[in-house]
Length: 101
Image (cartoon, rainbow, N blue to C red; front, side):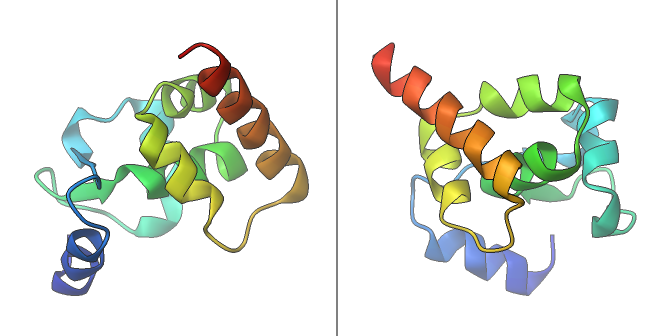
């Protein structure tokens, strides 16, 4: 993770979560194709994972992203650049997750 990205992550506060690149399933890594070639130990913010999996990922990456912490899903919903159908799917997941609490 670059210093700028790390600063953005810390600006999100203690609720921000990140996953190590090497620990992400292949389908999720493929959805994050435009991040370049991260190093094995690099961190990716979970709200970014949600955004890219919902917008560009296959079904398995959507499933992975849907199971991330609720706060990550909520922060991702606030990002700009969503495809309308992808954002609608995220909102449906958020609705379902809030109902199950």
